[in-house]
Image (cartoon, rainbow, N blue to C red):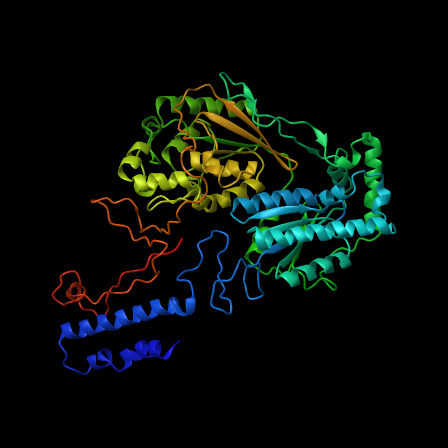
Length: 602
């Protein structure tokens, strides 16, 4: 702090505030001096924020949240990480023999981290190897004594690590998943050195499996190839799959075995596993690897071993991995029956069902009865429409507050036309960036994802579940299972009176849409074509900074423009002094003065 600023900040110690207790100054003079001193403090604080060329606020880039000054006082370029950061970029390193579910874990974990807003990407070393070696001959390529092949595999690993570095440093990534066997301590030491050189945190996930039946099923596990979408749902109970399955075995149908029959491919792959076993060195929590951060997943989640968790991201990874399972199950998602607010096109609300909504609740009960599911769990929101929809099921159901519809704040129970007329700027801002846009005194889709995350965790733990919720909530859940981006999520089609049947399969999710033949109003609003794409103007808003559109009957906003300082200087005007006078009815002299609160950056 410079001498001038220190002198200003020290002023109250020898000024009127110190003399107030023992002097006979009038109340007006004391308060006036008090306000002038506070104004000087605020002015000093504002200068300190802008001192030596520093930016007036942290960067508002949604990925780059940390700012560090360079030696010349200018903002630093995109950082990768540093030892003093709590959450620098993380490299997740898979460890384990082939056919242990490493790629399954990698893809599922990547889908989850992207869904909660952590940019994550998988780097599969096998794909680099297949690009370098076009024609695979046999398992001899993976023998430890094949020096030429060992060099090629090492070069492929280094190429993947270079791409990891580029992704985390230059492309805004936060987490990279290095998907390879990484079965030797030498390979893992190389990755640790790579992380230390670039200030990345390294977290290992080792998948250990000793059950022969599980290994065989992993070799022959089936995967889906997405075909063209089926036409929109028609009448009756015709099932219109959004994703058709082409059943092919993952391991024996990969490019390595394109020209082999199934039996030969199985034998070759088993011999490949034996090649890795000769040099396999598992993670050792007692001696060699006791200082590393890792989790061992043993026999597909039967047991876990967790060692030295160091930050929030690693904690979320461990929590997620300990909740998922691979047992067959089905998840049913549907919205409540048509409500009276739906008929009027109103946002949110807590209206009851329309006559057609009641018809849907009866049809839903009959449909679920035909599924003949044992131990079906039914979850609803705490809003009237969802509860009425579940009543006809005839069984127990749980009410989740987190399943309530997205809160539209001051726009609750308005129609889109009313919002556009009363708050045109808000209407335009939401069209520009629907995922991040937060309703005045309400929620955004980003907020909603954080709210429903416990539901996702519990869905991963359960088997057969029916979730009766609302349009925005259903979009969030569907985006997780279908691996949809934040940009796509707010525009996913979730029509009324339609059940989505989700069946998790290897590396994805099979989806069927079942229309229950009860007409309903269409509440879907397509993405406007005329608005610009991508993030619009960043609006730093909390629940008490309501609007950008001027409205005479609504409290004016407290939203900083991007070129305004984060701390406003108090003008020493007569009006301000009059406001703080003892005669002003809105303020009693209690020794404290309420000052304007700076807006909170969201």
